[in-house]
Structures are given as structure tokens and as C-alpha cells.
Image (cartoon, rainbow, N blue to C red; front, side):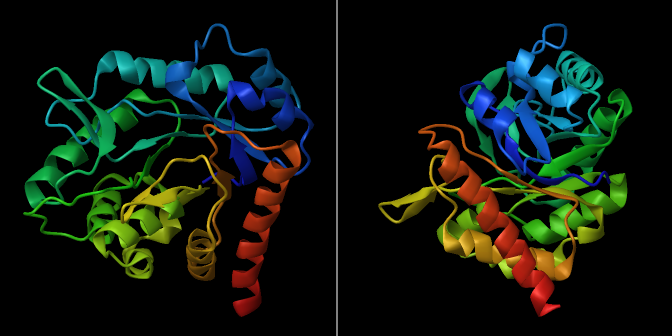
Length: 271
């Protein structure tokens, strides 16, 4: 996988901030917000500086029984080509069925039959894309009752069958630990981290006993601790901060990147 460094999710509200920030090695942009033929000026500026830009999809829905939409795949491919991207990322999620949109990135049933269907969907997506694909684990507030595999086992077998890259969101691992009691460390131990493409870090908040992964606050210490645990097991090619709304000052965002680097360095000291 491409060596990326430490980055931040590009949002139109942060365009000038990101352009002038020190220490932004790469960015990620929501693919559905892009028109490949008319890229935002800020992304063209970053590309001219040599900053890699990764298109990140949120609507492909490889977790559905239906095959991935050729039009959605063509859009992801066009985004990758327009940006000169080293890879494309998406979510291992269920987002629609029978023509109805869920409106959320829902967890997939972790059964053998689901794995068979998703394996075929991932292969179709890989065939349609000009660059490697990485899939992200999602945050959940519920689990399916008939799961046969843990999340780590499911992802490991999907990687074995397809060679797909992994985008591991440590904030989502924390969310699932908080909401469902699923150990983040156990998940890390089960994952084939040699296939790691990059990592997401983000913040959220607890409300009535549920953790909401909102990308609107600083990453809490438990999320940074999971990042350190991951880095103790593998050296991630990239780590990226997500912040989607209630944007803080430039200095606060820079501090968040510094905290990410500090969490990564703690793992290096332990090794």
C-alpha cells in the first residue's frame, strides 16, 4: 500500500485551513461530493503540492444482496483517475435494499452466506476500479442476532478471499466496544494488519448510554489508545483525522494531528 503519513479529511469548509496547515501529508474527500470533471480548486492546489488525495465513498453498499451499482463504481473510478489517487476507500456496510435507502452505514450480518455475497461484490468493485480498494469497518449501535463470525474474523476472511485493503477506523472500534461490548484489542488481534491501507481517527459523544460517532469533537483518549495498540502491532501507511461539522480553529485541528502523532510514537517507544 502507498505510504501516506498523517492526514485530514478534506471538507469545503476547511479548504483554506488544510492548504496552509503544516504536517498534512494526505487528504481524503467524500467521493459523492465530487464532480471529477470539475474538481474544487483547493484539491487541485493540494495535488499540485504533491499531496495525495483519496476518494472515500459512502454509498456503494457492498454489503447488500444486490451487486454494486455500475454507475456508482464508474463514479469512484472517475474520481480516482481525476485525482491521481493511490487507492479508493469505501465502507463494509449495508446501505440499501429493494430500492430503499437506509440512510446510515449499517453493519452487515457476519454469516458465511453474507461473506460469500460480499466477497463477490468486492471482487466486482475491484475489477471496476483503476486502483486498489480498501474497506472500512463501521460503527454500530446494534448487532445482528445470527452472526457466526466476529468482525475481525469476518474481515480477515474477506481479505483472504479478495486481497482487499483495510481502512481501520479506531473510533468505530471504540464505538462497537462501548455500545456492544466488542473488545477493540481482540478485533485488532484478529485482523490481517499486513493488508492495512490507512487508519481513521475521530471523535464523538455519549448520549443516554450510547456512543455516537459524530466526527464533531476531538478524539477521546480511549480512541487514541486504540490507535497506539494498532501501531504496536503494525506500522500504518497512513492515519487520517475525520472532522465533519462544528469545525474548530486551525490551531485546534493542528493540535489533533499532533495528538495522533504522539499516540503513534507511544507504540514505537513500547516496541
